[in-house]
Length: 417
Image 1 (cartoon, rainbow, N blue to C red):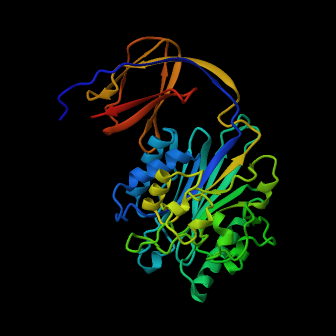
Image 2: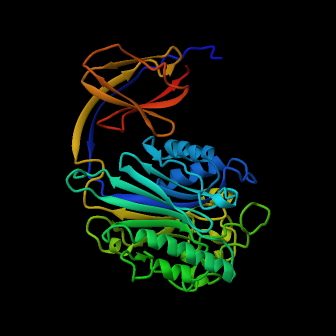
Image 3: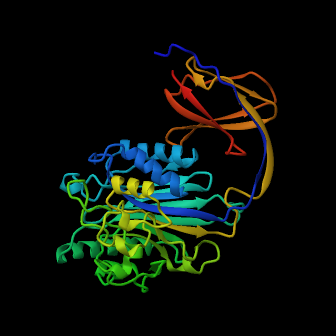
């Protein structure tokens, strides 16, 4: 029970000039049985360190165990990246429905809602795990007259060596490419996944890069070859971050390229939406040759790009490293360059009486967003003081109130109904 009633006045009066933004950052990350894997404590703090360091605009993940975990990832993203972060709908794996629903490894997508709108999502079933398809519309200045869409796919191929597992991976890749072939041939496609591939010559990878499909996928860094246990490919290694067993996930040290972001081949040359040259990077990989078969948090993996605190968080959070790249568009994300002045004040940021009190000195439209990134209300305000809005219908929790024109102006609210 709260003993002290907080009275905080938050006043924002500012002129904001927003310049053109033509790049956005993409990350794919295998989250290692999140949140069920608990060998390392404080994994949420590790993920906060990782996300706050890279600040992705689009986050694709696999190995999410349940909806609670999916919601917690969103909460971490909102607090470590931006309150504008939102998520796709969490959907459990459907590929094992006939065999007992025993697969607790789901895919998810998170995104900066000031830059993207999620238009559509669906699942592509395979022998063991779904691929998830998300269609995003870029929030550009010309989004109504000349929209740009990104078809984002997230997947997780069958693990382990052996011909049987290779055949399952190959069939999964065929299922994915058959689906992608139903999209318009000029679609912009990005595919993030843990592919569990030991070599580019495995049939699954050959299927993914098969140029006889209407849409051909490409490996942006063009690091194609026999990469497993081959130090020549250390710059694109993603697993394993650990050498000790019994930590959850794989051990054995840094020696495999399992994690990828592939793009449609047209994104290497397309003028509307394209891959930023040389932006592909394994986050946490300093490309130190001494790191081969070592733990990512050791001195052998030192380098200028990623310090020990980052590599320690990566080591403790997952046995995989994230893969990142940058995409570019000549259009301005978030609308054209503009200048705006906004003034509003929230009198009671802790609300336990169901009443939100707002002061404004100009006409404003405010948006209230819940902790899941969902818009729960709009408020069109006149030029007036001491406006009261009834929020007694909202469940208790954390909310954010932001100006609909300039979403950099945000007030955090705690509602206790």
